[in-house]
Length: 238
Image (cartoon, rainbow, N blue to C red; front, side, top):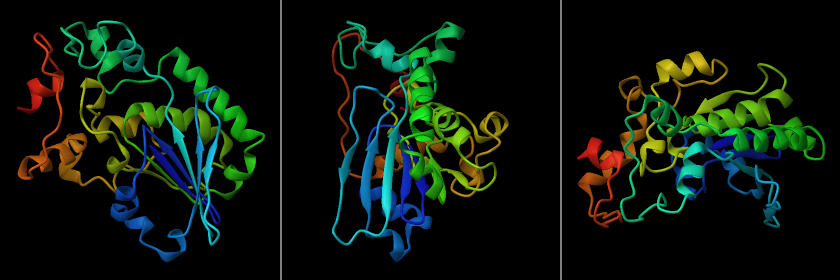
């Protein structure tokens, strides 16, 4: 997920969905001028239309952009490899598979989707780009890549702060939701601030924070129970 603040708008690049949790827990949003807003959804998929939710008293616009297709998205679309299927697994031993599915990057299709969105933002939706004040992006590579390809080329270099926000990431379900250390990410994405919202002690495990906290609550998460079904998270986090 990525969020961008505008004088009259807020742009967000997201993994799946956004909830009030992000606004309630992101310090930069604790400002009355962001409380009344207009919500616009843009998709990297050419088949999805933009959806707008408005409020008569709106004075701030929020734009959500979902990341492009990843290698894991494609893997999960294969019969027998779908989440919860008998014998489902996301435990891989081949280094090439691990590179494709751990913190899963955009596939060729996803890169094409991001490029198409970049063209759209540079033309018919250019007004959004002109008003951006702040970008908040999930530290997962799929969101960072989508930001770098679709949004960043349309920005004035150095004009808009780009902050990595762990709370904008998906919950850890599969190997694709296990992130990368901020030390590595800083080398790949020097345009992103990985320090403001990620404590130094969490730099190598920022993606596990929310999952670990759930162990002290009564929350029970659904997990596949079919015989033979194994997941990377179950092996690592038990």
